[in-house]
Length: 509
Image (cartoon, rainbow, N blue to C red):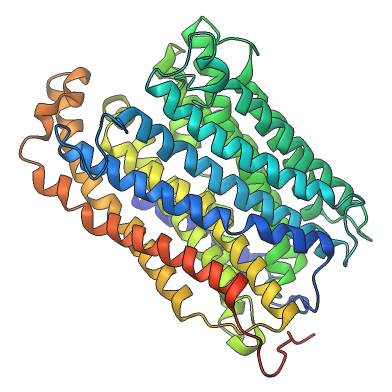
């Protein structure tokens, strides 16, 4: 693990000292003086993201209490909100708020690329917002009704809970998601096409948007039922749960991070482009094969546990190097001349947590001999939570702060980052500390799986004597809960309640 960690130092040193990027000057920082009609419409997406994030964290705290004391209810009676329904809410709310954040970011950035040229039919943005609200609320209602068995037998598949882990949404809501993603791709594609020059980062944004819209279909075959063969069905389910996320969304992240770090005047175009292609290479090479570390557990050949486990942990490296380079430039920029500081802080946090959660913890749990015994234990919770929030959640929040800051610049609104900094600090410290008790509990389960058997790691008896570690999670959980609440308050205030500045503030050209 120490050797793997040092690879990032070696790669950074190679690029910093041998590729000779230091002589290249970043371009002037982005200037925002007004919003286009399409960007103005995107603002309505923004409050949905922190609202759903807050609700997801509330569900996470509820589940943690049920894990610690399954026989008792916590605020809400288990007859009204049983464990399986709450878990479906917790998982799907995460997908919902992160997806909306990324969609909003793509829609807002597109007119910046074209220097103010909008999509020909801005009303499409309104239609997409309505579709997301309907699918989001309808899907959550269906999950609850389906889990409680309150839907007729012929309707649960279409409107309720399919029962396929992580993609439980009823098929009708799946179709709605695909339609929304296709509409989003069309808006982004036809807007960016108006740019004077389609650079490699813009091409990456366009075609990863297409892949995001299309690859979700892998979890919807056949359209009218669940595939009867579990191994085949689970193979394509992981195409959505892992490949859709760790290929298409990672490629979108690579393109947008390259564009934003250049647009914010932090790195040169050449450096950002090379790092983006390096990231794309690792994503295609390791993300695709890396999906295989799930295949062994659904009946595929055991070779996948080795290939997938080792390769899937290499993806975060280039993005971390990109953010290290960006931070070096950021350190020389005064906050007055860099108004998008908060968006950059969340991007930098994303790079670190992506490396920690997807990379370091991912390597721990995916080393073949470890994965064989730890699979499905608390070990995986540390990896999954830190990686998802770091690799994708923080990027979505960075998009929010970028949009809200651009809105404030365009309209001359007052901007203060005290609450923003507190929200970032609590959320980041909370998710970092969250991993400690889960890893301790996972170690005990790992020991039982090794000494007694895989089945034993899931019994309640294994948790005997670990009450302290089960309940100490209240501390990091509360930090994340308060952090998510502060993000919601901060975003809503900055978007709708901020007063006008006495002197209009603009970025330097």
